[in-house]
Length: 375
Ligand SMILES: Cc1cc2nc3c(=O)[nH]c(=O)nc-3n(C[C@H](O)[C@H](O)[C@H](O)COP(=O)(O)OP(=O)(O)OC[C@H]3O[C@@H](n4cnc5c(N)ncnc54)[C@H](O)[C@@H]3O)c2cc1C
Image (tube, rainbow, N blue to C red; front, side, top):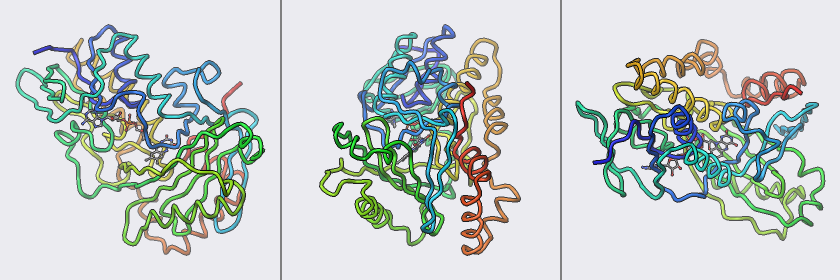
């Protein structure tokens, strides 16, 4: 049976970053992904400057669809607020292109990439890890689970709990002809976020170059009817002229993922690490998951390299994640906020969005990770 130093399950931003860093460090990673790239990934494609720096992609040199944003608009309870920065504070990319680009880069660095290879079982024994896929079985000393929400490595070793907080989302991504983009004018210059009245999620209108991504996501809970919210969003966008009445959208696609607020998964242990959505690392309030996937991919690669070369324990990876993203349980403030009656919570959100400095530094800066790039 072929033996590699490390097997990475999943080739999204988390897995491809981990494999790229390991290959660059001179190790022999094997990456298995169920899909054949370029593959569709349900995601708005909003990326922070920090994530771009972490993944070492220079936005000015990135050769595929990208738009730099130096403004963002929020809408809540009929009030609209705009924040502007002097330089780009975030970027829009197309996941189908971005993920393929990162995977090709990992391959060029020396990763053995197998596409169309769904992993069906992950087994740990005294000698190492055995990963069974539709393309055969493989062995390695360590496995990195980067297979997203339903990652088989997380299923085998992550102590996945039923208490997890799951976000469900739907989006549609459509490329527009240039005359349509021109006609939309300044509406097409900045992302817009529409906070749901019950504060369980938000909708978005996200233009990026000639591509429009619209969608809606919310935390799973009693009475949450995502298709009804999606239809209301599309209706409002058409009524306001953001979506031409006669323009056909690509069909909506749905996806789910876990945010890091309740019942955190086991992040690392004997012969494994979990990264990105497999570890449940998306930010709880914004749902930003690309940046945490990339950062955790880097940290996992460092820990696995130290483990393979010097015998360091993989638990150092879990410690680094907790240091960066917290323990995953709500702290005192979070617990108090969760107890607030909905009307008080709405009042707080209205005040936070309506105050320029709070919106810029707390909501957009801390929750969404949008900050000016130092020039
Ligand atoms: C509608 C929506 C909008 C979003 N918008 C944003 C946004 O704008 N910005 C942002 O930062 N985050 C956003 N997110 C979250 C973001 O998409 C994820 O957090 C991010 O993709 C996580 O990356 P990852 O590498 O961990 O996993 P993924 O990108 O999910 O990659 C996992 C890979 O594993 C493969 N795989 C799965 N199962 C197996 C298996 N059994 N065997 C082999 N391979 C397997 C899959 O094919 C896939 O390629 C959004 C999510 C949704 C649902």
